[in-house]
Image (spheres, one colour):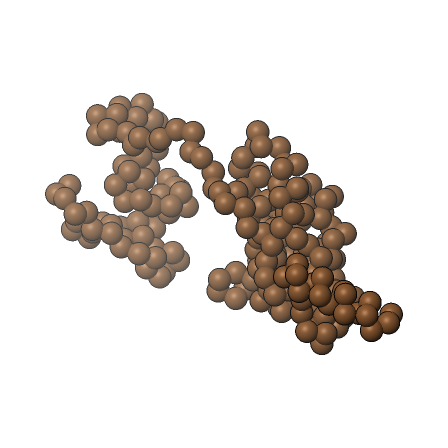
Length: 213
């Protein structure tokens, strides 16, 4: 390339607001040359994923991530290198999702966003191209209304005797299913107006009603 041709190219980049210093262009090209594909990085992301407590995720969670990748992400984005993925790639991919299944679309979008944010954290890319307003939200189809006191009474009375206490524990104590199961009632004790739930020989938690029982 002669000097005049080089100057024309530089001037064109300036006019298009695309100019970068030569050393930045070289560094960007090197990064593109060694950048993993989305499929490669996504597998690494799943394999090294940790919980908020720093523990490895469960096998079932990893299986769920890989299922979303296989069915919704990799067929379109798998071969794209991280440094070459653009907002247009993401928009085209998102438009191709089955919008009749908003929960799955939201889940796939959220996973894509998390993977690309991790790529930013690992300094593989400078910014994430995953920015679609409202893509991660799910519109609630109906508003859930809790049962009234009279309805709770009817529900409890219609249940087999061995399950009636579970209704009241679930309603008033907000116990998890495993803590309110009938077969674990032997791990529950009442001290005055306090309910104690034990796990083994250790107290799991205790609960005191805010209103007279």
